[in-house]
Image (cartoon, rainbow over all chains, first blue to last red; front, side):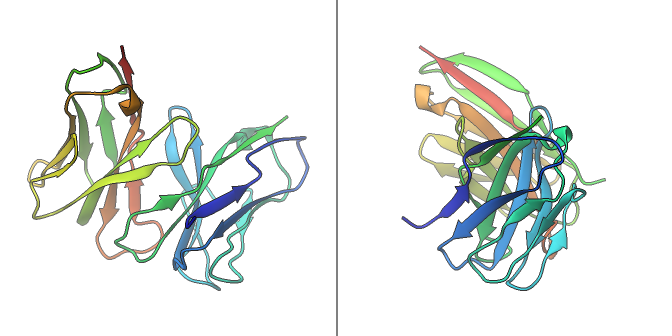
Length: 112
Length: 114
């Protein structure tokens, strides 16, 4: 089934630990995005990639890094997790700038 | 500042009733506006897209309207069903910008009860 796969679905993490959220798409979409969704704040862009080999910062990039080695994969890394990074993280992609976003099912991360 | 404001924040209606969700934006330059539906525990899914020249567009029981002059959009749901219970998110795209070009509203949470 074409779409976006995120892993893990849910994770509890100790503060200070390193964590990578995985995102893979099989639609050959050029652009990929990472959002976090918090109650009352809606979806906020963390990092994006318009095409393989390029990345950019979104609205809330601090504490996060991404890489885009190929078209399909776009991992999000928290180098040293803090409790304020407790959130639901969504990976998304779209084929071109005007197309709709396709979202993954989300990764729920709790940092204690 | 580019902003998207949605109202109401939450809404409870009885099954079978109609409802209208509002989205006001101050985004410029405007490219298009999308409504997304997000079921609990899932990612958002696109319902409809409105471009500058379009006033209304339907997708089944969902009808979106756009007034580009007043910078307002609405999503009307007809004959609501329990499965309509979800968060509805209004997203406006800036014209000709990549990456950070999407401005998200905070969503309206709709609960349909029997």
